[in-house]
Length: 285
Image (cartoon, rainbow, N blue to C red; front, side):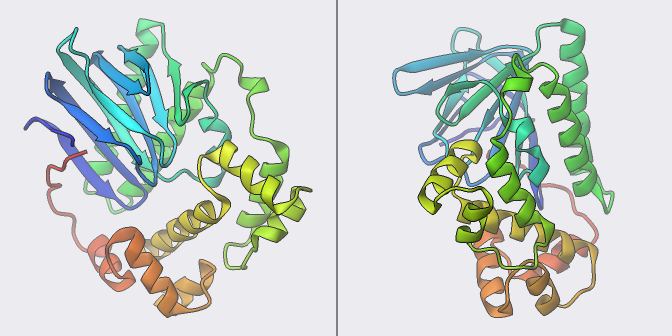
C-alpha cells in the first residue's frame, strides 16, 4: 500500500509516468511483485529507506535509484529523517537505453548511482523537474519531450557510473536487440534472436533476463506496444495498419493485448491521447 500527501503531483502519459512527491512520516510503498516497467527515483531532500530481505538502503540528496521490471519494491520515508522529497518516473525504455540502465547493483532488481557534488545535485534535480514539467504540460508532444528529457538524465548519470566502460550490455544481447528493432513489423521468433546471439534458446533467455530484468518475450511485447502507442498518438493509420507495423498480424489479437497493457482499446487510447489535455488527477504511486 502506498500513501501520498495532498501536495504531490503525478501524470500518466503513454510511455512515461512521472511525479514529484514531498512525503512525511507514514509514506510507504510495498509491491512484492514490482511493476511491469522501470522505476527511477531521485532524492532531492530528506531521505528514503528501502528494504530487501534482511538488507536496508538509505537514500539521501543526490541518490538516484532504479528498479528493473518486476523487482521487489519496499520503500518509505526514512523514520530517522521524517521527510522525503523525491522526483520519479515509471517508464518503458527505448531500445538503446539498456546500456544506460546498467548501473551498479545494490541487490536483485535495484541499482544506484550517487551524485556527490552539490552543484551537480542541483543540476540533476532541475533536469528531473524539467522532465516532470514536460510530462504534465499541455504540449501535444509532451510525452515525446518528457522521454527525451529522461534520456538526457540517463546520459548525465551514466557519466557518473563508477565503471562505465566495463559494465556494458553483453554484445550478444545487443546484436539480438539490433535485429529485433531493425524492423518492428517483422515477427522475430526467440529462436532467431538466440541464433543471432550464437546461443541456445535457454542460455539466451537466461542471459537476456539477467541483462534487462525481463524475459525476451516480455521485452518484445513491451516495445511493440510502445511502438503502437506512438503510432496511435502521432498518426492517422488504421488499427489494422498499426497492428501490422507493430508486428501483430491480427488486429483482433493486437487489440486484446493492447487493452491488457493500457486498459483501453486502441480506438479509445487514440481518442484520449489526441483530445485536448485535461488537468492531471492526483494518483497514488
